[in-house]
Image (cartoon, rainbow over all chains, first blue to last red; front, side):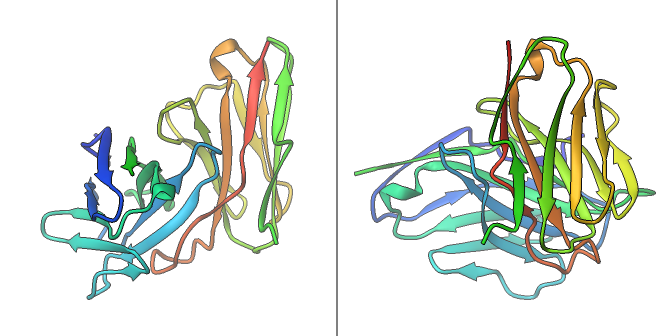
Length: 117
Length: 115
């Protein structure tokens, strides 16, 4: 079963507008972490934001915020005031500990964001 | 300063010729991961080490092996590369002391071409 689901293969947004990238997850581990990474065409994986399962408040990092809805098992990324340089692939990832196993980090399929001038 | 270093950045190998990709870290992290990422796809976890404990993904082909001789280094061995193994290979590390930690750190990747 897929553990991380990103339902938007591609998204478009106008420069300076906000955009939300969706991510839902599935885990039976009560202690887990959720991450968003940006991957530009150069291929490097750039960490954006982290949310722990026990964190009471939604994470924020500059223009990035994570809309964490634990009951719905969703962890959407909100990018405010989009910039042309935000055009990239965005991956949602989860780190948990599968039953009987050690913790591991798995990725969703990604969303390609294009920011239009 | 680079904290997770992958060598080489680009690797060309012949079909069927064994190849080794390397990853080193200066973070003293417990966990090291190897991912395969093909064009326009998500990174696919191949295996990971928690300290010396090796954890293989069920669908990772036997053609892929890994070694972790010490905390700092981890290697990915492809015993007989096929054309389908051409991809970006990403190494990442994390503290691994519980999920209250922050991000996994990635190297810049090795792009493997099989000819």
